[in-house]
Length: 223
Image (cartoon, rainbow, N blue to C red; front, side, top):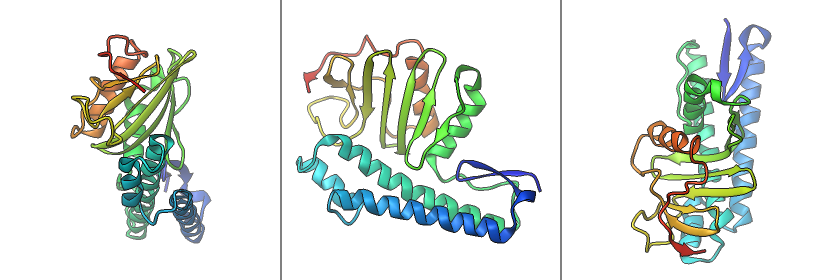
């Protein structure tokens, strides 16, 4: 039957039985569910909405709490991906498995458009997409939807991050903001909420491949 991608992992179908495939899906779904529960338990909340309230109120530190918020959502999104894939396979549809996970969409597009610029294949972790490029740019991406994402990257000794945590409301780009290399928080001029996920991410990537420190960003307030 060939090879399929199951939650970002290539599986040779002739080498695994249907029962084995079902067992693998069930185990992966359980791990994703337990990982999400552990993230929420760490912040003493029942769901992602309650954690976001804590972030807005300043009851928890913006980072890594916002990354944890996104991680919980992404883990649940990946579980939905698994369920959809399992239903498709049960129906005999191997050629057109659904893509619900934003990370899987980004991974597929990166492999299609940037394979020649990457020093290793995009790594799809449970809750993040890990990328390495030939310029020395290293990225960790948490992208839930067109309005909620956190993208961090390193270049040499420099660490930067761009996210949509609903804080820093004085910036014109709110909620988008940049944690710059000089440890300031600035408006985000490199992405825009509401845009297609790949359109938005690839536009940022094109900038970072030539200007990884975003040196022309508008100065902002101190962290």
